[in-house]
Image 1 (tube, rainbow, N blue to C red):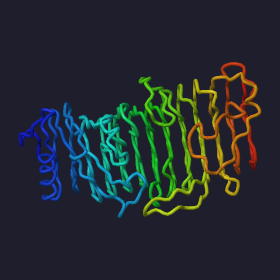
Image 2 (image 1 turned 30 degrees about the vertical axis):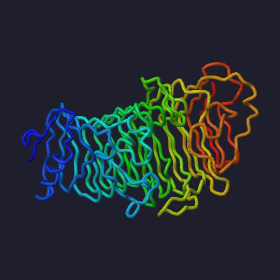
Image 3 (image 1 turned 135 degrees about the vertical axis):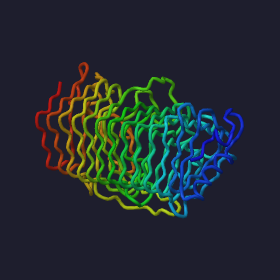
Image 4 (image 1 turned 60 degrees about the vertical axis):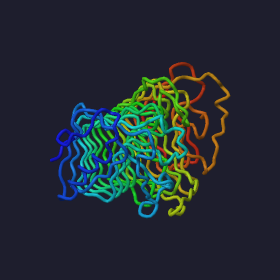
Length: 436
């Protein structure tokens, strides 16, 4: 075991200590693995690369303070082995690992990125993440606190056997600083996390042609200016066997709206499930969710934008099948309404919404009744992508097998619109649906 105190590494938050911290990590690598303990103090660092069989402990009172200078971070190329859109300009991170096995980052200390200091650095995609692990196996990140990342706070790309446990994220003063991004990974558990982020809180992606699958997200509390639990935006490979449960979604205490699409302290959508790049979505269950103030409780979108990136060809749309949303209580949603919308030649199959209660702000504008919802396969996946709806609760189109069972939709005042409207759907079952 090596400690920063033992090697007298400066912890004044002003002296750049990247090389000294990397030397401790490399010594573990030379020994086949080991433990590095960051003792209390503030350590100014650029990018660090982890090694196999490494336990990095950030002690209580310790801060890894990310440099505000891009030159202090190695620019890693990912296009050759993991081509993905947000890696086209290369990637940077305070903690980086590629193709490593058995690595953990633990302790109750803090990793604090540069946040808003990188907003105008001229390279959006290559702003430093706090954590980026690519192609790694047996990963544990536990109890630490992540703050003010320059880009996504933590990005796990094509990793296997990942546990993210009791991690806190507070990242509001920057742009594109998602709380957690699980990207093309297999066998992942996210539990007991507290996320307060300006961009999406917990986000599953399939940026590569490798699917994101066998994922459990449970017992998390989120506040965000964007989406709380999301599949997308990058959706190339697929999503299979995803279970999200026991989630609490609340309004952000920060009322300042950042300049990102849809940014709002109320959050955009609570449950945002969508694919526009060809990915399939199968066997997804989201249940036992409480949300208060979130503008749109849920949406499900199957589109076909057909995006192409270097090293990643466009993929034709593949099937959605087996989406269940149940046991949701949503208070004080906006009058926007929710939606399930598929493609005409490939309806979304077997969608269930059940045992839930939704309360929406009312709208007295009778012209809303005559709204024609756009039928455009190129429309993206956002809560307001289709504009307003002629119903205040759920609008559905191109669904093959839609069940709405024991669901209460409530408008907080007079609203001329019905709670539910569906078009071009097959095998629709509405049972104990209350409109009040």
